[in-house]
Length: 195
Image 1: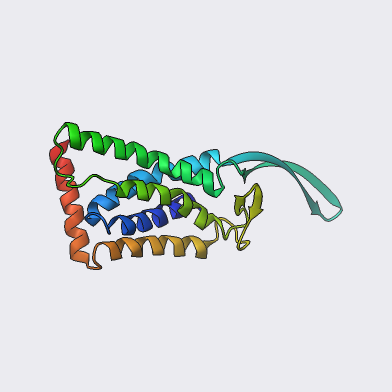
Image 2: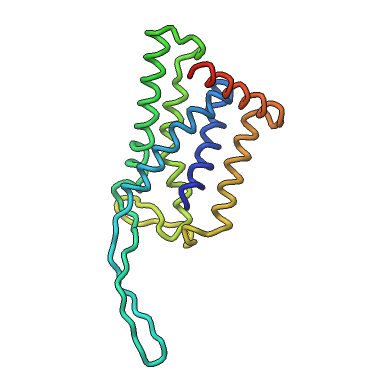
């Protein structure tokens, strides 16, 4: 899947999960802060460039051309390593919030944010969930496994992943437009006064 699809889907699921523990706006902010670096790490370091020779025929002519394509590796596109790489941004955010809350009386965050660690554990696995139906698949015990053989840029799959993520964000905020509007208005108001 495309990186944007991974981001929207992960943010939607993580916001929905975090909304069980705190208000949805805190859950949305932490989901954004966890998802973006986790997906970048998995996509950037989970691929290696492989040189492939392609032969094309034009009537009686044959043209051989070498191209470089990115191929998924078992280093990061396996369940255990994706769990680890999704957890790293979450643990950094957890430590920062825990430090701010306990040592600088940052009381606007009422609870110790353990939900961030749960979101971090889910982040890498959700990335693999979206890679599972693609032709590249994921790796289980160093063997490639794929549920379907769709292209990573399949329009229908990418669109459905984005829509599902947006729908989960909508559900997390109670399913009304007014709640989402006032939550974003509150977030912008807080950031204006902090900065």
